[in-house]
Image (cartoon, rainbow, N blue to C red):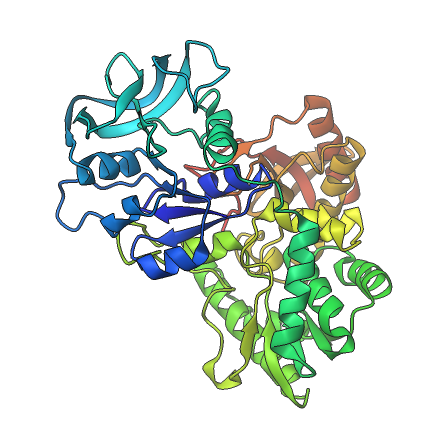
Length: 509
């Protein structure tokens, strides 16, 4: 195991991902972790993350300095390096010239982090402070034009520091630096596999649940389907899945799930038709936040009513992922900002009094897909693009009506069919249609039309934290536009969204 100590970096998840890509288990822990707990975890190595603070700021994050007496290899990144230098007797000072973005790294001592690399290459920097004096037994291993001490090492104690960010793709050889730390310094073994995770998770669920019942809300997405399959593998028919049809699903969504989930996964699923309830509650509502709240509250109401019919249920299963946990709370009440309050973390009705089972809470999205494959789930389900909880309600700008839902479903179905035919479905993070609240003039069959406009949204991303608009081929866009206008009633115009995230969001509402 490798432990990442959270000093507030926006790249904590990325550091953990880079470690796990090497089949080595890694988890993020708060800086307030006790020395006793750290010893119990028994990591092969520790990575001190970066962060937005300055080492001399009041309330800047710290960790028990006895950490450096444990005899465990330590890698400090950016603020993590500053903390190491400062704590062990060196000096950090505000840099004469701040360094943000690309820089050329010049290697002075290649062993061990820069082994088998060129003497100079591009790296990515993000700092306003710099080390100006090193503690005893430390040497400079790399520099840049603006930063004389860009990387350091204490070879006797296996302490290393990087001013650069090796975890971001912009740093050439960054992944290799982390690999050298894992295997050349920490002597880690490649034993973090989805087979080992699956076996361990099944055993844990069996031990925790016993012969009791678990209820789970199933959306048909990757996360909930994989979580349900894993729980089912552990407790069989004592898992009761509830699928709420809110009337805001894509074309043939429910029918497709009935075909794929029940026969292939042998899950016990109750399909609840609540379309009328949701559409009635949404009548006349145009504000995006109100839509979300109405849908979220009504879902809990419908789910709870159905769950109460299942006698003896003591557990609630959820497909919560590791990024959800990290994003939804400050890791230690310090500099990590709360990015969002995720629907799977908190927000459950207290009166349900069910104990949580979250078997995926240590996994990233790509790992969930690997686990799904390990569990025998078909590729179509594993590679489904994300679909928002509020469904098509936040892809229809303005009021939600049956007619507008029908228009969007048909247009979206055409879009996804053509994306799949072009072999692009798995290459895109998301691709979908949006119904705009405007009408425009057109000419169809020599007649004037005044009809609706559809926007096409397609983005590429690794984790949805940032996204770039997809450069779809013009002939594909033309084909999609022609088909939507010809096959979907009341559409006479199609536009393509070329906004990245940031500044835009992936969804329109």
